[in-house]
Image (cartoon, rainbow, N blue to C red; front, side, top):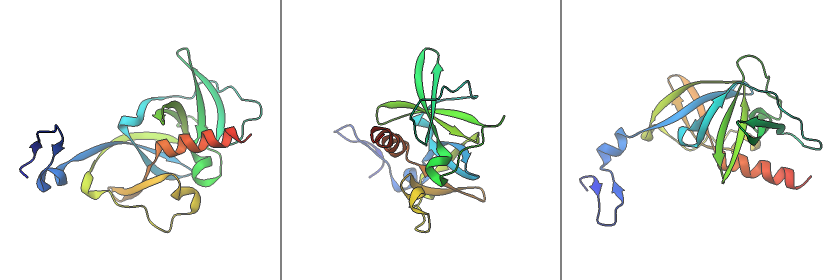
Length: 167
C-alpha cells in the first residue's frame, strides 16, 4: 500500500510512514523509576493542592482534591508499582488522567517533560519486571539512555476501582 485513506475511511501507513510515526508521552517518575503516559490520556498536570483524606480508603488511594469544582480521586502511582508511598515534596505533581471513563489524579514524584517516541522503538515489557509492575506496564521504550515503562492508565484506574469496591 502507498499509505492513505482507503474506501472504508481507515488510514493505512506504508512501512516507511509507520516507521517514521512518533507518539507523544509525558515523562514522569514514581518510586525512583521513570515511566511514561500517553499524552492523549493526560488532561493536565498540577501542583499538589490540599488532599482530603477519605476515611477507610486503602492505598493506593491518597484522597480527594477539588479541581475547579470537580472532585477527583488521587491515586499514589508509587503504591501501584512498588508498594511504597510517593514522596510529596516540591517536585511532586498530580497528573490528571482519564481512563476507563473516569478522571483520576496520579500522584508522582515528578513530571519532567514530553517525549516524542518513534512507534518502532516501543517493545513488549521485560519479563523480569515484578508482578506489581507487569500489571500496569503495557510496553517499554528508551528515551536517550533511560529505559522507561509505558503505563496502562485504564488498568491503573480499574485496579484502584476494584480495590476500593472490596473495602
